[in-house]
Image (cartoon, rainbow over all chains, first blue to last red; front, side):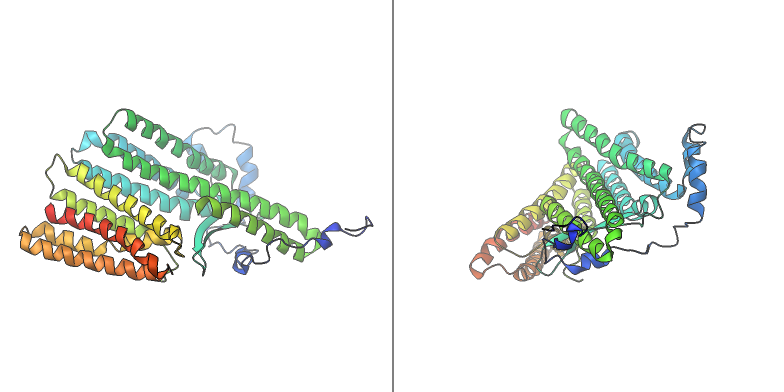
Length: 248
Length: 142
């Protein structure tokens, strides 16, 4: 180790995993390659305005007015609410349970796709997916928006509320259906839980990974780009191993 | 389709279609049960076969296995479609058996690519045979 205080200790640290696949570091975007949906000009102007009238404007209209992507927010909630509503109310409108099951499943699928690809990307700037490398090993890749363009706080809060509250609702419905209704509905509720929990867990990991990565890049920028790269590789490797063990 | 890219939307659609086709012809009191059991059989069946292929040392990712096994249900969809319209057992049975053979052939090709050792390949193929045969049987007897 180093004797003098003036020499930074980190010069002697080497990465643990030398076989971390390179594409992971190549995929971390330093320039935001998100589509034109992001308009950096509009957001900084909105943020001071969002904090002040936030106390005055309660209610749904207020939320939509403060959001930078009201359409995305609207669709996120509408699909989730529609799936639960159809599941609960199908008995009143049709006696054909297969039809209502299919409608619920289709709504759940649309909600899953929308949350993962549209809402996550536009509202909080996070993406995640699974990739398989040559050995047949699957690993998860997380991407995030450059923190120089932070997301709208109202958007962010509503997104996380939607993401975490619906799994609990479906869990409650699962308990109800186990206790009361026939077993035919359990697979649908199970499917809903799988979809919602997958999104919740995926975005939580993506968010955590993004915070770690950007915090490390900020800290590492003082010691040159090389450290950031190695730190990023360390973190990417750590996240890959830990998440890989969870998801096999 | 590039083998390494997986998606579960195709298998979901195929599974739902098979469930709908089989439940349309079932007696109304049983139609929901038939639909649910088809969905459950396909999902649990692919899960079990994939896990077994992995345990036998196959180099396949979990989701990749689910994806391919789900797509391989497609010939059975065709057989179910035919069975919806034709009620003669002499037409349904051979078509269902042919579809079953096609499914098994397609998924065995996939298993070959996962580099399981030769002695163990039969251990991996046997549950596949059972899994698809269960579905083919449901098509024949509806």
